[in-house]
Length: 218
Image (cartoon, rainbow, N blue to C red; front, top):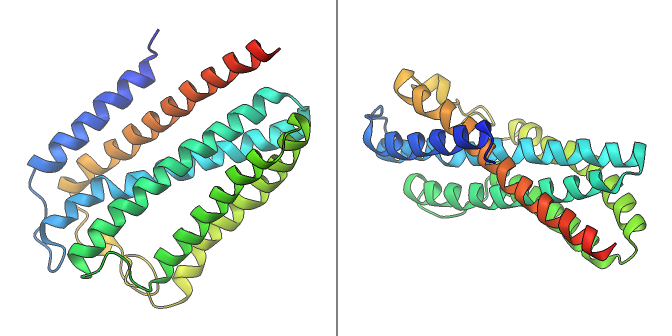
């Protein structure tokens, strides 16, 4: 049975995709029509952060309870977070090409995001390299608990301490300082909610499949 939040996620994403392309946007210098990527790029990162936060929380729950179900949830939330992080990087590169003239620049925000994603890719490699289930769950949980705070520092704190092309970092004004008016907000916020719900739906499906595998193995 499809729960209400899954239907809500689909409807909000469809709304963001359609209205994001059709509704008028502010005609800002340099950004111009590429500002529509705000509806797609930024929600990817919000969704990623929520999923990685959920992954860390379930990692803590595993360490406190030893329940393997929390390890499964922690791993799958992290996997879904990596997926949305990758989509955030791709949409960001497309936006950078249209506004900065290159898919990738030596920008602290971009470099920090790439380092953070590599940290979580290393998390998946770590899990796959340990055969013992209990040992894998325990080491992964500890790694996860330390990774999320470091990741948030990398993408939110360090880029603000130096010059950056990215809006809202290194003295560069954010979109609120430009023109994040009602025309953008009426699509942006539903997009964030919708993509986040889709992210948790993807993770939920993977969790259910993993639990089925565990039952068969048992």
